[in-house]
Each structure stands twice: as C-alpha cells, then as structure tokens.
Length: 422
Image (tube, rainbow, N blue to C red; front, side):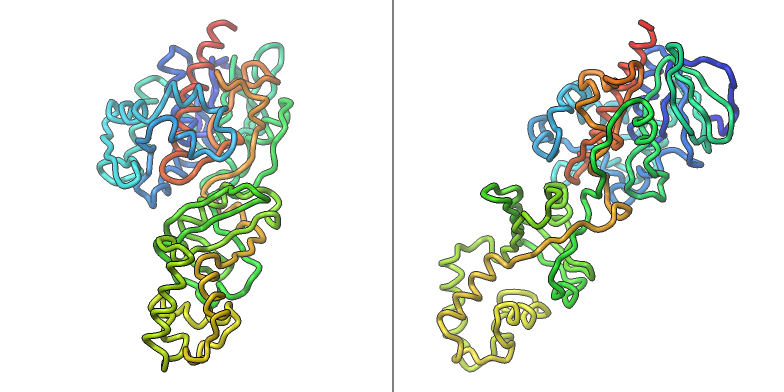
C-alpha cells in the first residue's frame, strides 16, 4: 500500500476521495469492474471512523429485511432504493467473509465481526483493495476537483495534480472531526454546481430548556417511552432507555429521536412516559393503592416504588409538590397531576448537541441533484457521491454503515461503467 508516491500526469479511470467505509467499498467495486483506481485518504490510515463504530466492535450492518431497513431512514429513504436493493446486508457479510472476516448477528439484528474487532473489517477491505490493484495514497489531502475538457483534475493539497475520467467523493460529513471528517466533500460538491442542505448533528444528545435534568445527571431510565408530536403528527414514539445529562437528555431513545427532529425544535412536543406498560387509569389505580397503604409516609418515600430514588424528590417538585408532603394530605387533584406527569412528563427540547459529538451528519449533498440509480451527479457528469457526504442518515444499529457500503458499491460500479463509455 502506497503512502504518498504520486504520478503527476497519469490519467486514471477512477479517483476515490476518502478512505472510509463508502470510499473503500467504492474503490474495491470499481477495481473489480476493471477500472484503474486510486484512493486518496488524508489520514495516516484507512477507516478511522470504522474503528470507533459499535464501541470499537464495528456494527457493520443490520440483518433486517429491506422494507424494515427503509423504515430506519427518517429522510430521503427512497433515494436509497436502488443502492440498498443492489447491495444489501447479505452482500456485505458475503464480501467480508470472502475477504477473511466472518460476521455474527446479535440483538436487534445487529451484525458484528466474529472477532469483535473493528480493525478486522478495515483490514479485510484494505486487503481486498490491494489484491484488486487499487493504488492507495495515505496522508494525501485533496484541494479541489474540477472537470476540464472531459477529464477531472484533482489538485492535491501538498502540490501536484491527478487526472481521471471519473471521481467518487466519499469524504464523510462533519461528525467526529478527529477521524478527518471536516466537510471537504461539501466544497468539492459546491465547486461542481451542487447545493448542500443544512448541516447539523444526527444521533446525538438533545439540550433541554429545563434545568432539572442536570440534577439527575448520569441517571438512566429503562423501559420508558419517549414520544414527539409536531402539530397533529406523531413523529416519534418508541420504548427503551434514556439518560439524563448535564446538558439535557441522551441515551438510545433520545439519540434516535434526534434523527426525527425538525429544524424548528419549538414546534415539537416531546414527552416521557415512565409507565408505558400501564394506561392512565391503571396508573391512577396504582397510585391509589400505594397511597392507601402508605398514608403516614412522605411523598418521596412512596415515589421510590415508581421510579429511581434519585428522581423522586425532583419529580415531586415538577408536580408542584414538596417531597416531604405527607401522603394523607395529598388531594385527588394532586394525585391526578402525579399520574399525568408519570405518563407524559414534558421535555422542552431546544436543540442538539454540537455536530462534533454526533454519530452522523444530518444534511449534505442534495439528493435531488444525484441520480439514485448510479450515484452520479446530475450537475457534473462523471462525478459520483457515496456515504455520509450525501443528505441521508439513519438510526443506530448498523444502518448508516450499510448506507455507506450500498452507496459506495453502486458508485464504484457506476463509475467504472462510466469510464468504459467515456
């Protein structure tokens, strides 16, 4: 694998910019299709973001059916129809197996390497590229991508030019900048006539207007339900786990909710149901029973039967009550208020945490300007996009890596076919 040797005037078939999941898959597929391929990666190694996915284990894909996959993509899922159907999760696992990395399926259909090592996924793809003849250039940043006289001129940041019949931009988004994701691809897209939809973090914690979550920092709630309604439309309603933090809320439910939130956070009513297995009537009966059996106790000591002890005093105050208030002094109206808050505790979301903390980027190259059947630009012929640089993102569970692999495979094959015709 090369680490910097350049061919100043060599014309290639395909140049892939970015050595992450999408870029490596694109380069591999293009080379297998017979193209002369170079992959340019500005980091010192390939697949930096792959190494941190799945907490270092790499959740490579999800073994769900295709229709369920599309339900995990909140925006622009139809754009992925051709890519995912042509290269789905079974194609990913088969390819990795062929390259020497076996996979396993775990809870929620999440697929991991049997070794539980993300590095094995990167090594497998790197091995495949080497065997296919892909020229890999590390520590190689790109300054610009311009098409001149039917050929792409790729200017390198350290000086020099490379020329190719087609270019695949697979530079990632803005999440995890430590992995080299600094938005370079958006600049390349703009200089070739593309628009970039607004960028923000997705799969990230949410900031809350209220200060009380900070009092519960580090407390996790299991088997609760979080719902979000915009106008009359319910945009999210799922059960699982969440976490209180110094800035507001996080955890699996909240991270997933962030991918559904519109730009106007104030237009959405988010509520927390702490007793999703019970109806409002059943909650009230439970409260009546608890109160009747503990008439001499204080409210906070009874609330511990309904929630973590740390939350009891805070919850009592949210209901407008004192934690020390005797149970025998609580009115019917106050009991009903407690019941309503147990079933629908409001969370006034004000925004997301910084994009640097997000798992993926929301927004990117406008998919209306990219042909979904090939991943080729509608603005500049011969320019292709793959992965997180596109305005497509999904839930956690291997879906975003599958998007990277699917769009990368389609872009690679399409770029190789384009160069044959060019």
